[in-house]
Image 1 (tube, rainbow, N blue to C red):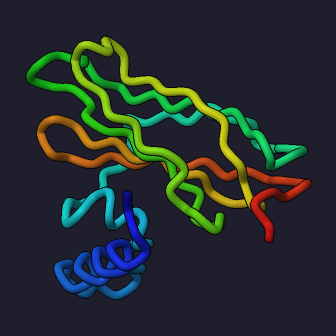
Image 2 (image 1 turned 90 degrees about the horizontal axis):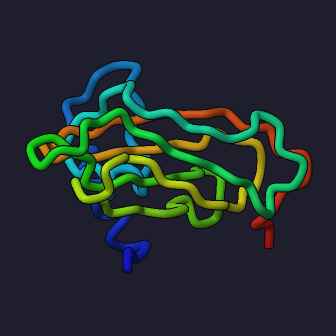
Length: 143
């Protein structure tokens, strides 16, 4: 189980380990905890969900990663994040070549209109990212 303290310390470590470049914002602690000190690459990830969601209490989402899913080249983990939620890490799925396809589906709650981010870590250690903007008309997760 990930604690708030480990997320914050992982985020600080990721910021310290990465070179300071003008215009690059630091990673959110939840994402930094998932990727560690690996760079993020765009592509290979497809997010399937509605652009306009009437009710944020139950939003269906499917994440697909382009991968041959062989022993030598496969997706090991898929992470799903909604950074505007009180708990930004929605889910982490662990996969192996036995899965055959790097695809997961679930339902999540969205606190407000925001970007939903999917991350995938492959067996060669690379991390891929995909992002999808969602507009929520009736928010969820609000205390």
